[in-house]
Image (cartoon, rainbow, N blue to C red):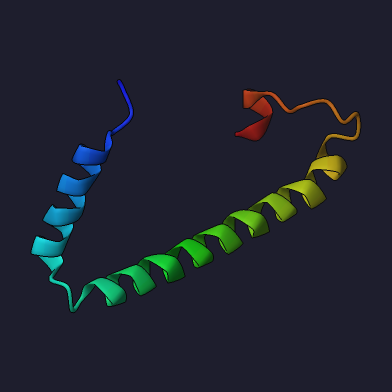
Length: 70
């Protein structure tokens, strides 16, 4: 699958403007940005939890197997 070219991106942008309207685009972008920030913070929090709990459960430092994860 090849990456989208400039013409395809222009068509997608045009469809988005037609669907949402130019007045709602800032609100949509703001909501998307807020959602991405929340998602990133949750992922970091989960990684921090795994980093803290991982050494206690697996003192050898070796990666856990799929059986150990479930």
